[in-house]
Image (cartoon, rainbow, N blue to C red; front, side):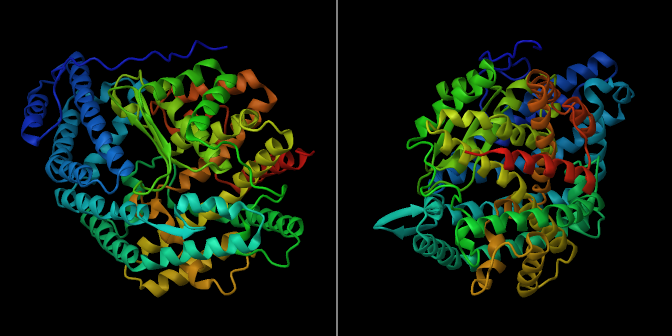
Length: 576
């Protein structure tokens, strides 16, 4: 075993900011940025001092913003939280962008900047240079405006409910009924959900129209022809480009689509159906009743702590610490934004987990996923500056997707019945495969959207439908539901709030299958390599971090086939 994992509860010490300083108005923050601007960088030691002071200031601001975002998403109908978030964007964010650029240029002009050691500053140095190249003062206001507009997605979606069996349900809660064996119930609830989404289609479309316009303008301002290439560069994708993701799309079409169609045939046979309709894809084909891993969120929390602890005791302790500090908000409720996330608190060194649990197996997977992110936060919190603690999504999602698979045996905590546990395992392995077509559809759709910014809504609908069938094949029969298929993308938060942040899930899923394979073949070494890779944060390029975990960073069809074959073999071997 490698060194003991540190789960101690501690907060970063402040040496630059006063201990009791609270982020408020810009006027109170500005003197600290001015001090950094006046800081002499006439030696290696002076530059190091500057970096640590800047990191301390960045961490304090990041944590303040984190809480504003957390409060807003936990309580979307609370005007005070909404105003607090908006206040940050309007009164602080614009100034931060300007000063970040000034501080970046100040560092880059120092003769000692290029002398920073590659370990741990290689990725930091190249990111600073890229940010200097991309910065445009005219884009600050546009970026702020886009962030404000994109948050309307959460407000609109968080307010969506349906009435079923004389109860008001969030759309997340309604999802439980898509797992029941009664097909009429599934169809009824699915159509209610789609009808409810239809009510706000115009609102969401208008929001997205505004976002496309703003994002394209930002790209033009920065000297790019399209937001696609601009966003790839601004996201710091140094190790691959749009052409690589298109190769990834081709591999999904070639390798995964036939497997997905094979799984659809199995579903059709098990359910004794002539056709698989959209409301048939959530029901368990291996049992007559839905999987019910827990009833209360407290059971999900305790079960996760136990499952992680069985993998390695310190991992469970990390979630225990979060619980003790009230850093878990797991239940679904009206007025709460959809989705789930793990938000690192940069000063505290401990993250916050947000999700919408309603008692399904999907909730268990989500909690395991976010726990992988949480473990990553704990393991990378001692790196020297905040910039190298923030990992690119290809690494962050490797942490989370791998944890989903490493904890497959952890399902025993939630199911006393072995058959139920194996049903859950088979369901998860199916999901590992079926997520690829959806992600490829979303990513290819976004590339088309921003490469063709003047498209009409009808063209948008048509393109989405064509891409859906390109990657999914004929696994689902959408006859009579084409209207809903064309608008299916409107439920995807990433398209609105995190443009182009999605292909990383598929890249990371390939890596996760590799982590799991290594773990199956050598549990101790496989787990150690995974954890050691997470400790690197973003101190090395992505391929090197994957290598540390014992993986390839490969987009090709051959490597994808190896991963999918391994997963399918494991899927077929689970029997009872």
